[in-house]
Structures are given as structure tokens and as C-alpha cells.
Image (tube, rainbow, N blue to C red; front, side, top):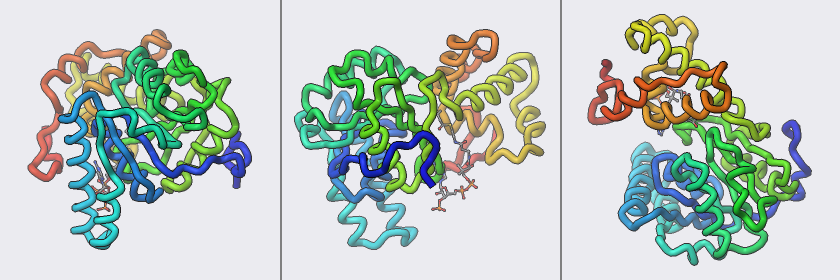
Amino acid sequence: KRPAGAPDKALAQKVTKVGVIGAGLMASQFALLFVRRLQVPVVITDLDQARVDKGLDYIRNEIDALLSKKRISPDEANRLNALVSGTTDKRDFADCDFVIEAVFEELGVKQDVFADVEQYISDTTILATNTSSLSVEKIGEKLAHPERLVGFHFFNPVAVMPLIEVVKTPQTTPEALATAMATAAKLRKNAVITRDTPGFVVNRVLAKLLGEAMYAVDHGTSFEVVDQAMAPLGLPMPPSQLLDLVGLKVGAHVLDTHHNAFPDRFYRSDNLHKLAEYGTLLEKDSKGKVKGF
Ligand code: CAA
């Protein structure tokens, strides 16, 4: 069944090489998914070689983990490793037909990143942004061809979360949208097409949930009590753990964005910004398993 609002599949362009801008945790996670599911070359870039190397290390470690869990064969591991590369030279993006960014969640930064990469790519390259709450249309404002831009919003952890929010702006062409939908299907994710509105669908709901949890904490309830109180709802993880997973800094930023867009509807927490300076809420063991508060 064709997802609501999806254009004809036949309009999708072939994706034979993917460019990833940003080599942070989200970008590295989806770079691995692209290489694994599309089996095409994936090149990642960032501001400097150290950041690129960190992203490549993450990907190569995850490939090793898949190999040791016997999810992939040694041949497959070699093939995936050979398909991934890193660069600080945007000319390596010249033959990418799908370029996606996950750089800092700030409008000006994303606008400049796209305006810059557009100088190196072909006119038919599709551009995608992993923004979680900024306007995709505004992100494309400095592009010569904003009609090729779509939102392509993954969730953390990318390997297991089944959804991608595909965001259509008033300019997005049916070809760009069809390519995004076909790519999401190849990644074996469910894709929904959402309006270009702050937080799209999922982060609006999460910002409400996490915002109210933070409101309770900021007014004297402990995180332990909030988590225990929420347990009967059957969430896959309690609010404190979800905040840690998303990252306190990102979480605080997401709450701010929603509050700025809808001040009467969303709570922003100064306290969460302060907590973010300390890093995490929960102690974890060396394997990343949560030990508790
Ligand atoms: N990275 C990669 N894989 C991970 C992972 C991670 N961080 N965390 C878990 N996994 C994998 C595990 O390796 C395991 O895979 P295998 O079966 O291949 O071994 C699988 O997920 C299940 O892991 P667990 O056995 O630890 O299972 P769990 O039942 O504890 O589930 C969870 C873990 C899937 C993360 C689950 O707790 C969950 O769904 N939590 C909610 C996550 C969520 O809501 N994410 C959205 C955040 S919001 C966001 O991302 C948007 C934004 O813009 C801010």
C-alpha cells in the first residue's frame, strides 16, 4: 500500500553513492545503515579529520560487533568496510546522488552546509536533512535548487527504531519525495510523510512527555519518582533513560525549539541545560548498560 501522500514510486531516482555530512553519533549510525542496506559507497565528512576518524571508528566497531554476533559474514564485513570512506574534501561528494546532513541543530549552520555542498554536487542530487525540529523549507533557503531538499528524520538508536519521518516542503519535487520514500524502504524503515512544522509528529509528542517530566523534576519531584510513576504506561524506557539516550544537550535544545514555536504549549527547562553540563543522568557500566541513578 502506498503511504499517505507518497508520489508514484517510478519517479524515484537511483541512489548509487551516498554522502553524509556530519560524523557525530546520529550521522555515523545512519551512515552504517546506508552502507548495510543499500550496499553502495558511503562517504562521510565533518569539519576536520579527527571528527571524520571518530565517525569512521564508530562505524568500523559496529561492523565488527555485527560480525562477532554472526549477523554478517566476514566477506560482508570486508565489503561494508570497503564501501565506507571519510573525507574532508567536498569534491568527493561530486558523484553522490543522495546527500544527507546531521550537523548541529542550528538553522544558520544547516543552511550554510547545504549552500556549500551544492557547489560540488550535480543538479540532480537529492539533499536530505536529519533535522528533528527545524523548518526544512528554511534550511533550504540558501540553496539554488531548494526543490531537491527533503527532511529525512531518523530516531535513536537508528539500527532498531523502525521509523523515518520524511518531510515535504512546498517546493519539494515529487522526484525528491519519491527518492526519499524509496530510500527509506531500502533501509527497511517505515516512512511517514509529515508537514514541515516544528517537531513534525514524533518530537512534538516526545517534547510534551519529556517537558512535563522535566516540569515535575524542576518543581521538586525526583527523576526516580517520575520514572516509577510512568512505568505502568509501558514505555520502552523511562523518561530519565530516554533523556540520556537522546542526549541531555539535544533534549534541552529540542524542548527550547518547541517552547519557542509554541510558548503556551511546551515547557522549556533551564535546569536541563545545567544538567547537560554534567553529561548524563544515569550511571552506566563499561558496556553501556544502565546501572541507575
Ligand atoms: N545502538 C545500536 N543498537 C542498539 C542500541 C544502540 N544505542 N541500543 C540497543 N540496540 C540494539 C541492541 O544491540 C539489540 O540488537 P540485537 O538484537 O541485534 O542484539 C536491540 O537493539 C535490542 O536491544 P536490547 O536487548 O538492549 O533491548 P531493549 O528491549 O532494552 O530495547 C531500545 C532497547 C530499542 C533502545 C528500547 O529501549 C527503545 O525503543 N527505547 C526508546 C527509544 C526511543 O524512543 N528513541 C527515540 C528517541 S527520540 C529521537 O531519536 C529523535 C530526536 O530527534 C531527538
